[in-house]
Length: 124
Image 1 (cartoon, rainbow, N blue to C red):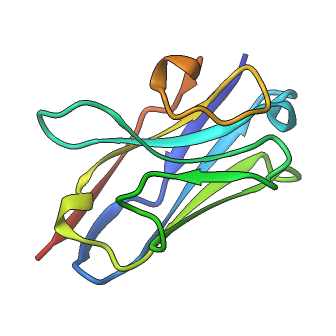
Image 2: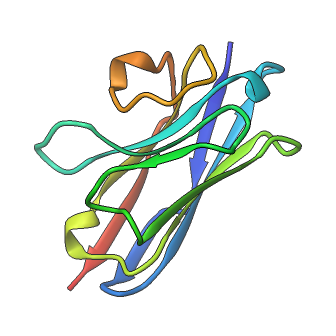
């Protein structure tokens, strides 16, 4: 079992930055690929970024490439999402997710464990 707790969301102006953190509990954290997803109001939950078990491989949605960076610290059981050059269209609830396996997938049904979400609001 894995429990995930996100933090770091908030209100920021366009062009600003935020760093989201996801603290995981459970001794198998280092065996899991992790992902960040987001869900804007009234829309579906979409893949944002993913990172492999080792941290060597990452994947990003086209809409965030070059602006967002996913990383992990396995010693701290934590995954991060650094978000730069934020845009109003980045406004959403951001969710951390963990899957049973070491590879990244961009589909939400591949992830078995989810955090409660953290709100990110970008004002224009």
